[in-house]
Amino acid sequence: MPLGRPVPPVVLSPETHGELEAMTRSRSLPASLVRRARIVLLAAQGLSNTEIAERVGLSKPSVGLWRHRFLAQGLLGLYDEPRPGGPRRIDDERIATLLRKTLKTKPVDGATHWTCRALAAETRLSKSTVQRVWRAFGLQPHRQKSFKLSTDPFFVEKVRDIAGLYLDPPDHALVLCVDEKTQVQALDRTQPMLPLGLGYVEGVTHD
Image (cartoon, rainbow, N blue to C red; front, side, top):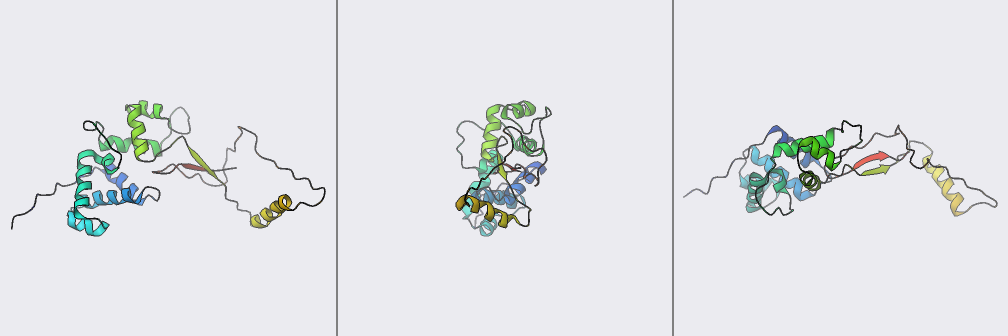
């Protein structure tokens, strides 16, 4: 019986392997994208498309499609966003470097996060390339979410008391509310900062 067309091998650099591993551990990326990252990692281990299909719950043609997309376009080939035109001009090592700088470093000028312009100058890539990679990986360094977790053991009781003043105030009651001054923010946070990651924004406590 004639054999089918040989499946091209998938060889990963340490940087690309690390980014794919991070994608499979992400809880914020779409499940389909996480599955595609698993496909590439399993392919790099030498598994056939049939074996990979059984492990990830997809058809053999679908596995072959994403293997081919990765070999042709690298990490960005795993995304659904259409990429018309000629072949891409940035390899996976430069993408991995860009992601690592975005997630693990700060600008030398003391800024709290990278801007598209600053990172483009640092990596010698175009602004449009940085924007495209950030968008593909769900990175938004300029955004933060604030959260506040109270460690007060009587927190619930105090909330009930305060809510009661608003919902059913006693006669002649006066309620005063004190908040931080506009544009003056706490330097020390009561909870550790949640770092920027693939698919989610940085989180800090609202102190």
